[in-house]
Length: 588
Image (cartoon, rainbow, N blue to C red):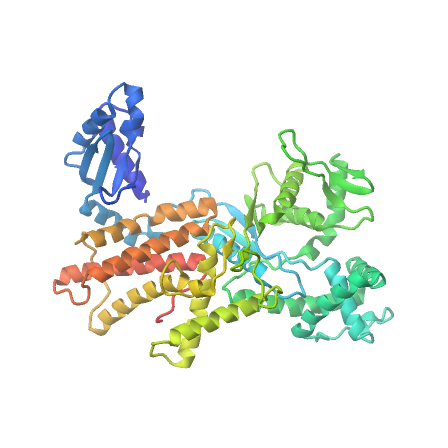
């Protein structure tokens, strides 16, 4: 079904046309003076010069043509030429009732859905997730869900860092601890053990220790580089040990991402395109794009319109080693072959802007992507502490993501237990659900590119623009509906009727904005739009709830209509919550 503002603009356009003016003047927008009207049209102001006529005269003529309109119950021309509009309750009822009957509340789905790949993980194997991984994970997960809801085919890829020097460092760290392991015996020809020779806890100790040692010991770093080369060259023992590292690390990553309701369709990494790199390099050389500069293989990506220096994109270092550039470009090549996407979206720290500009230009110049394939990078801002600097632990170190989640869950548990009759086990389950909402909504309610301050007290509050407030509102609606059923009522076949008061009408008008909001969120890849809509919807519902008797309403038709409205609000809220990547508990 069409978006509400489109329908209102069509009606207004017909009035302008009937008055002898261009229908395009009838564009309707929400009122910037809600104390005076619900919607407004400023077309007469734009038409004054075109028709050489006072705008108030044009507005009055258009308003006269709306007499008897089924859409607007009031259309008032006010100086110097604005049209103040109020909707007919019956017309609004038709719009909202139609939403309730339509799949996805009448959201218009694309005639030709896109195939979209979203690259939004970027975790490094053998290293724990830290708070810096929160933003790309939750932003990417939400964009994936929003685009799927909007009718597109979307594939989420974690794109692991699993093939560089850090793997050589881990192998050296393991060798230092357990030098007699069979993986380091070049003469060994048998089957390697199925069980890993380390736990995830040990693995997470090994990398930082090896990394620190390599910075102080040049010989150790050289040995790690040699181990990396052997791994990438196919040494049996190193490959077998690498598979253990991958299995143990990926299982832990899945657990930690899963605690945030973040799920990837593909668990690919840099290693998946290792064998594709020689072919890609040969292709770039044969096409005349790649050339040797100071020993390295590069592709020029500067353009005449550049106002800043854009360095060449390096494909291979002077020693022939691959870089992140190399694996990212080979990954684009693989994605085009396997999936033929219409769009590839990357979500990373915003400080990587120049890097992705180089990668995208190189991919287009060398024709790794089709001409109509869109490459899009979304740079996320940082999560900061109260000092305005990237969030740290009390000791000044980078906080592990699982610790941040645990601290948020503990704070939610404390608040839920205060003044609520709920068992400890039930409170723990609710706290886990609400903590995820607190973290994700606190992040997603900001524009992706902006930094924000992590404030655990504010994020876990049940008041204000927070995840717990949104969930508490949805749970309140569920509670009312459940009480009605406990009183013997049925939620089947309830009929929605025209709004009975201003707050109910405001709530219906907010519901009617859902389609336009969701379509814009999908087009702009903007989860913050969903958050803003949810907050407004929650506020409109609570305003309606506090000034309206629902379950004690004596008029049966009126009560059933309000309950039907509550069901629609509940369903829309749960849909929005789901695309943001969290869920509504049954009670709080």
